[in-house]
Structure formats: structure tokens, C-alpha cells
Image (tube, rainbow, N blue to C red; front, side, top):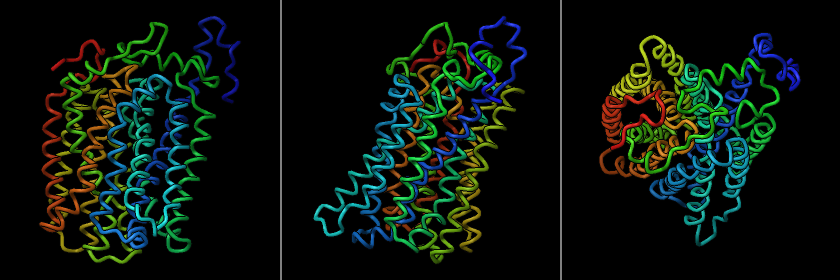
Length: 448
């Protein structure tokens, strides 16, 4: 029983730590962040699935719909660093719980916009921009949990599980939203997305704590295991707080390199999140049902590849060190993604093209935990701010692809956006080469 670890048992002689068991509360929190991550992506991807129905109701062109997609990503991108700063200062428990309520409100708010309004496009853009501000909290806050709760040797798999929620949430969204949309309309699909968020956020607030020593369910053994496994520069212990300033973060060679690589990563990821469903239906000629099912493939590939990449990363780190386990794996994964994307444009059969492109999404997500493990280890107690800066790069890539993809497709055909994405993957792969600072203390970071 988890509750058998009491305050009185913790106050006993030090030898009692050996008799208490590892309660693994850290993995309960990681699993619940996985679920919240899935809900976040349901809230994000539901617009790409319901987008055609919304566009018909509001008389939007693909270009105008692209502006609505970009508005979300722009709000999400611009508030990554402030969200990380907030999570560092207020704590990830309260910050994330409040954010989930925010998502629910602004997801539902779209259903109240009247198609007859003279300001339909500004309203939709403003709502999606504000929703993006709220969702900006998600991963900087989760990285605060990883930094405080997860020993270095487990961070690859922990981040892999968290970001498997991205693939899982985005993967179940097409059939889930399509079913509700067909039977009850697109407004009902957004209401259901909002309700899921409220439930997940309420449970999170009940079970989470910012640090292991604040949680009543954590045993002495688990607390000691966590503290012993934290990097020396980021230990959350009686040694006190060590926070990094924004200037030192923005002038750090490794942070800048990883941020640019994550920009390339985000550009590619948002092709799948924003346009893949529409690509299959309008370009590859699939009907609504086929598009719903085949558009799931990249996201399930992400869900499988994310924890797999984390596991592989941790194993390589233990055997060969962080340079190979984080930097080299990140570089190789992005290079593989470029190959899959280039091949996918050459496949004539729509179903096989979906499979090949899904391989690109999977290889992309093999590198996901590398980015977040490195940012947690660079940041320490400033993990929220460091990862917020890094993730801002990814989301700016998403802003660009959400609007640039339909423009490139209209001018040069739909192969062009995937070729551009492949070239960016090559650039992002090369950017990993100089990244060396993976697990040392913040004071060891290299300024520009």
C-alpha cells in the first residue's frame, strides 16, 4: 500500500530507508502527464479534423484556415519562455492545472462564434491564439517535473512516455473527432475535447506535487533514489536553488543549437498535425473515413517511437555517454526523417504513401526525448525556462509550416512542402553535431 509510508516512518533511523520500498510515484506522475499531453493534442488537432466543416460554416478558404492554424501556434510559440518562467516560479502542479482549465474554456469558446458575424476570422484567430497561450505551459511544466523527479538515467524513457501522449492524442483524434462530427456536429466535438481536459486537470491537481519531498506518498527509498540520480548542478535538495538567467540561456551555444534543431523538428511535425488529414482527403483522394484512419498512422508511429527513442537513448548513455545517447541519436533520427519524407513524395499509391510518411513521423519522434533530456540537464531548476526557449523554436517552425505549407502547395504542388521539410531535417541533424554539454552543471555551459 502506498499509504504505508508515513511521516513517522521517515523520521526513524537512516537504516529504515533500506526497508522502505521504491513507491514509484514519479512514474504515476509521468503517466498522468502522458494523459494530459494526449488531451492537449486532442485540443490542438481537433481543428485540423473539424477544419473542413468549420471552413464550410464560416466560408473560409484554405489560406484563411491556415491563418487560424497559425494563430494557435504563434500564441503557443511566443509564450513558451514566459510559461517556463511561470512553471519554475509557481510550480508545475498549479501551473499545469490552471492551464488545462484555460484550454477547456477557449476550446469551447469557438462554438459560440456566429458564422454571420462580420468579424469571424479575427474572432477565430484571437480564440486560437489565446488557446495557444494556455497550451504553452504544457511541456515546460512537464520538464520541471522531469528535472525535479526523474534521475538522469531515466530521463530518456520518462520524456519518451510524456511525448508518446502527443502521438496517442493526435492518433485517436481523427476517428474520435470524425465520429462525433458526423453524428453530432463539429461543435459537439470541441465540447467533448474541453470536457476531457477538465477531468484530466482535476486528477492532476489531486495527485501531483512539485517536488518529491512534498509528496505524502513518496517513500524514503524513492526520495533518496531520485536525489542521488539528479545531475550535480540541478539537484533539488537542501543545497538550495540554482536558477539560470535568461541572458545566460540565450547566449549558450548548446541551447541555441538545440533550439534551431527543434525549429526544424517543429516545422516537420506540424505538417502532420495541421495538414496531413487534409492532404490525404484533398490531394490523395481518400474519402472521409479513409482519411480518418490513414491519418492516424503517423501519430501512432509517434506514440511508439517516442518511448522507444527514450529507451534507446538511456541505454546508449549508460554504455557510451550522453554525447552518443543524446546528440548522436538526435542527429541520426532527423536524418532518417529526411529520407522517409523524400521517399513519401515519390510513392504513387495513397495508402503506401501514408505508410512511408508515417515512417518519417516515427523516426522524427525517436529524437524527441533527446531534446527534452538535454534541456532538463542544462536547465536544472531553470528547466522550465530553458525548455520553454527551446520549444519556442519548435513552435515558430510550426507557425511557419501552418501558413507556408498551403502556399507552397498552391504555387508548386504538394510534393514541395515535404521536400522543404526534408531539407530542414538535414539542417536540424547537422546542428546536433556541436552539442556537447548534456549532463554537467549549469556553470559549465558555454557562452556564445
